[in-house]
Image (cartoon, rainbow, N blue to C red; front, side):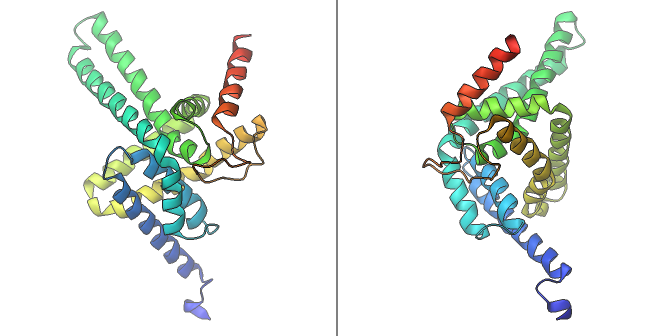
Length: 239
């Protein structure tokens, strides 16, 4: 009864914050090898979506089950993303030095900014896509770019939130124990709406989330199904 009632809003809020801190700690731990950043982020998204909202089987169990399921495609995807990110960063730095020199410098800088925005907005959707869909690196990249391009303003807002989160952690490093899960929680509603609508329009499943697993799930779209769907949509757009 009273304050110590488990259903008390204050207790519910404190439990939620504690779960978010645990999930953020697991995310930091799993990001240490660097090439596991995307699998860890996919596991964090799954954990926040399911456990923190009260429908999962436990933070530790759900996080590491999702992490293992996303590990195989996620490691290669992380490595490629990090290499591309480093190249884009170096390109933009070079562009800043030559952008006012001539027309070529201005065009080079504009192209670098455009590529950078494309990469960052697609990066926002990579962990949710990796946590939700089965498939290889190509499927995750194509779906992430598709979602980011179709919902550009939403993607830019999420990228701005990500930048603010990075700034907050840089200002006060201890926030790393809550900012990752908090950021995921802030974008969760919009990202789920986008992916669920896409799945329903594509008639791939009934909208229920499926955690990433190495084995085939009957209600989870496979890489073949996604490739076929994306190819058909490309042909329709050209027609």
